[in-house]
Length: 126
Image (tube, rainbow, N blue to C red; front, side, top):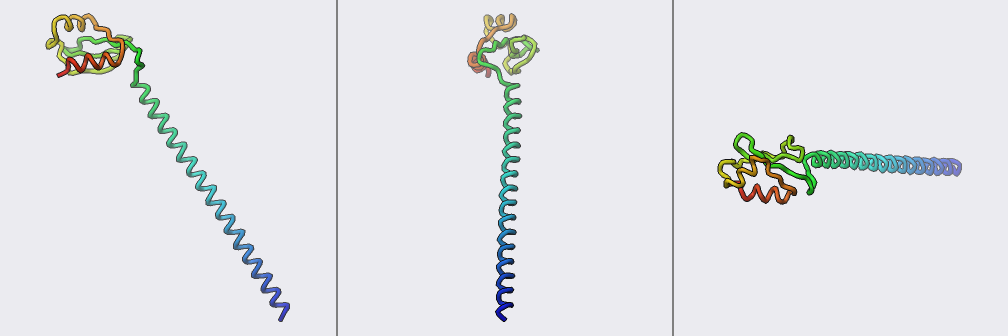
């Protein structure tokens, strides 16, 4: 009887050790999976931020960029410094402007900063 008791006790200890090892293995596996998912999510978020920054950079202008205001079909259009790329369309009618401003627009009025550009547009928009 004592022989069987020692054998059963050894079997019980072996089962406990096996269950403990299985638990430890599954815990480490789950922890590694969670780390990998967090890393992938971080990469996705970073890629999305970089894409947003790239898109925003395409539409942004530096504070030192020069703009030109010109007549486009009777309305003021804002051109970038190359005088070909349209930066913004406006609903400001050229004929409604004072004569001196109208002449500047027809000649291609130069504005040197974004702040001055939006200040001008705000003054003359309805």
